[in-house]
Image (tube, rainbow over all chains, first blue to last red; front, side, top):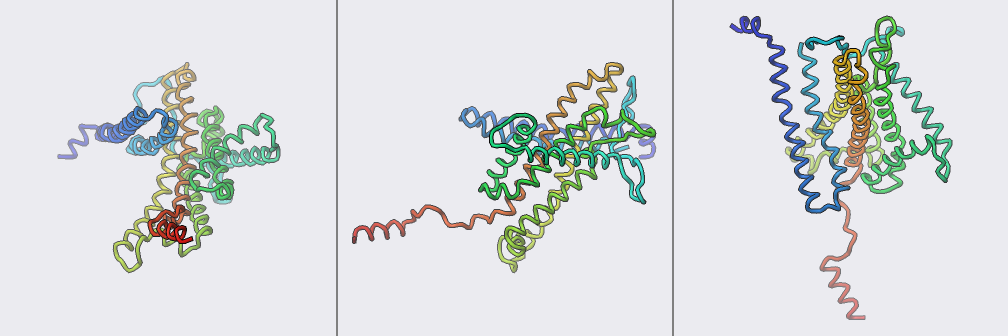
Length: 77
Length: 276
C-alpha cells in the first residue's frame, strides 16, 4: 500500500514541507524568549542596556538549529 | 533542485568542484581561494605590524588595530590578566581575520558561479565549504588543548573533566561523557560557520535568479545582510573558542578568598589589638 502512496504523492516535497514547518518553531520561540528577557531586564535597569546587549550574540548559537533544518532541505532529494 | 518557474535557473553547488589534479591529490576551487586568502592576510598583517607607530597615523593600520583590540579585549575579559591575553592573542587574531576576509571577499563577483574556467567556477569561499570549516574547527580545538596542557600540565588538565575521585563510578562516567562532548564542539563550530555562509550564498543565488534581468538589484539587500552575517559568524567562532580556552585554563574555584574577614581572624585581630 505504501508503494501506491509513494507513486501518487510526492513524498520528498511533503517531507521537506513538514520538516521546515515543525523545525522552525523551536528556534523562533527561543529567540523570542531571549528578546523577552532582554526587554524585561532593560526596563528595570536602563543603564545595563550596553552590557546586556552584548549577550544578544547568543541568538547566533540558536540560529544554528534553524540553519540545520534549512540545510536538510537541500540534502533530501 | 526544482524551484518552480524562474527566468534563469539558479545554479547552486554545495560541494566544491575539483579544478585540477596534482599528483593524485584533487585541488578544489575552495582550496585555491583559501590559499589566496591566507596569502592576503599574511601580507596585510605583516605590513601593518611593520608600520606600527605610537601616535595613530590613519590608514589601514588603524582598521586592523581596531580588530586586534577587539579580540584582545575579549581575551582579557575571559582569561583575566593582560599578559595571558597577549600570550594567546596571535592565533585568535589571525583566525578572526582569516574567517572575516574569507566571508567578505566571498561576496565579490569574481568568487562564485559567474567566473568560470573550463565550464566550472574557479573560486569559491573557503568557509562555504564544510571541509574548510571542519579543518579550522579541528585546528582550533587541537590548539586549545595544546595551550591548556602547556599551561597546567597533562595530568592536571585531565583532572578538569573528572570532578571527584577516579574510584567513584558516577564521576568517572560523567568525565568520559565530558570528554566526548568536547569533541562535539568541533562539529558545532564547523557546522555553524559553514551553514551560515553557504546558505547566504544560496539566498543570493535564488534572489538574483528571481530578478531576471535586474538580478543585481534584487540581490542587493541580501548581499548587505551577508556582510553582517559574515562578520558576526567570525566573531562568534573566535568568541566560543576563547570561552573553551578560558574554561580549560582556569583552575576552577579552588583559590583562597582575598579578604581576610572570617570570624576567627577578626576575633584574633581584636584580641591582639586589645592586649597591645
